[in-house]
Length: 227
Image 1: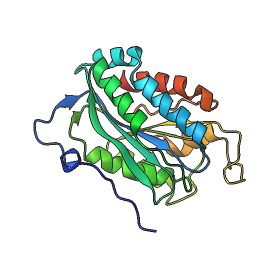
Image 2: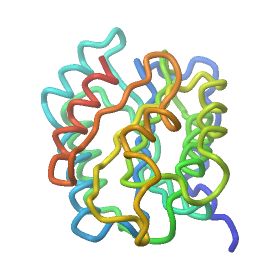
Image 3: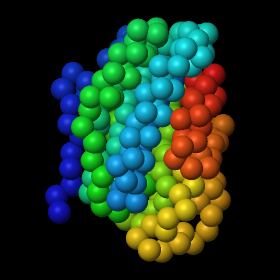
């Protein structure tokens, strides 16, 4: 199967020019849409990110930053052959910016398919980061998912390459009581994320105990990442 390529307007894919608009942090949200996530769970994830980004508490943290703005991109991923830039880079500095971003995400089509390639998600997110049109003082990939890497190359290699490129990888493991493709994970998911997924200066994870708790976990995580 041919690998899907990143699709967006050419201006959004250009490397940041000298004098590019500054932001406090460049943040890629990399969200699992593999087959272990059903339609209701996919909806809860989308709503969790929409509500978190547009939450006035999150916007206030953004505004209190040294620059008072963040750069935000939203990626969905599944197996090694599928990653998609759902929302290209946006500069979030006001409540209106955050509300517009949340509305755009509500209108974007959803997909659920294939296996779970966290390594593919990190590789793709690193390329998205390299193409950011803003200049960030920090660079972070926030990867969420409900399973371990079972497609593509080892996740530790992709994680280490992100860290070497100056990108911090944070994690949001979702504890799902359904085995992935009928198989239980080899280790508890939170331990797996701690050992194999997160990395870089100040890297951390916040566990969502289930999909219903996802929205609260996302909000707490965004506030910590931005602050």
